[in-house]
Length: 483
Image (cartoon, rainbow, N blue to C red; front, side, top):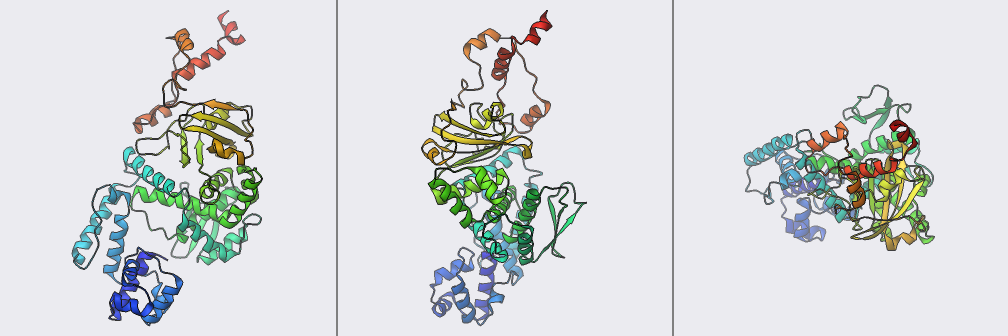
């Protein structure tokens, strides 16, 4: 149920019945301030409240809960309220303005129209790097404030799961997905001519979801693509009006897909049993629910703090150390931009997420303790061949490592980043030895990215190159070349 739409319909039927908020409140046993919040979309009524309101207003429940707005004025009020909830609007520094009776229809039309024009100029295609980083920082901070757990998405997942009777025992099957799709009023068609840039296409007129043939997508990828598409329907996502909304919806659709594949109750029971045996492992969660390692890692971070009281961190990075995704609520000192986001920042070379690439266990799980200025952290890193050799890391503070498999690892590093002397500079004796003798030529794309996204610090450069030259100085091939 869309709280804003329900509130508008409730106000419409209340006024049609000629009742004040106080009078309606007396009939349903609810105070007027509560009903006012419901009409303004700030509270969601319980089913018992909706039944009582239906009876008091002599209006069928289906009419109260319809998703159609009752008037053009109602459409404008909802659009204006949603506009004020976006990052684009908040970035203007304006106070919240209630669309009360004193605000004429004409004025409201102008305000909504101006916001729509503003949103078009602030779309991701036109957003500057600083605007994009600011929106990403806002979304990251909001997720951290909720400890990685999104109640409204979990609730939406529970509702669609009830339609297919999937309890989390065994993998989610094609039949389950068909039942979910049907319950949402759609059907899925697999095609071989999907637009190259699209993960899926929704035909809202004929209620069809098009996605790629299975021979183009692996089973888990195809399932994820369909579920993320269905998420926008189940969550009632409107067309995004700002960069922040696009990033929020992207986060929620990925969350929803994981919450359907690994239902909350089943996943929590599985994790609690593993924690009681001090044998928590992301790979077990992956195998139990037949999901990708990345989805399993992110599902763990969704549930770990809420249900296991385990603050945690998650990182996805490439071999160069550039962060693609990151989340933490355990104080792990991940590099961040001025707006608080870690995407496109560079990891310290001492962290397990990057050290795994040079580990003998490159294609196993790389366990490591890392001492930092914010404390000691344990992490498990998996290098995924499905993601072009990206590393996926889940970690916790030292005192919580006792609950995980791999806690007995002897690997331990120390990181003092962002201090210059940590991983970006070679030891002083090597700096002196190789001064002026080593140069590097950075990859053109890396240099271009740095120019397009100013303010993002570069990867370890000359210091790493000096250490490389030191390791290879006495290679037999070098001596032969000299001779």
